[in-house]
Image (cartoon, rainbow, N blue to C red; front, top):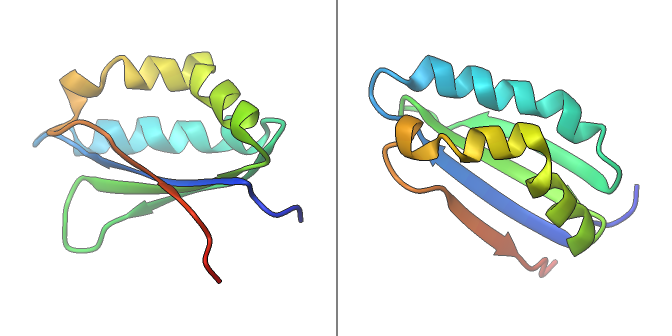
Length: 99
């Protein structure tokens, strides 16, 4: 597997009562994203003991692959609803590998 040049985390906190809807939407992103050219990994996690708190760990070949991912209609459809569905803005952190 190629080494990811763009690695990030994306954290989403669902509003109370929206947890299942957010989880379903995020789960629906897994298959198409993992098929995208340039996507090396795209993992979704739930944060233990914090209902409705979701965390993606993502890796892409390069910035262009990440930019293409964000531009996909299925990603844009979710991002356009984050004010409605999420208790706080998405928290996206880009990472540098140190080891």
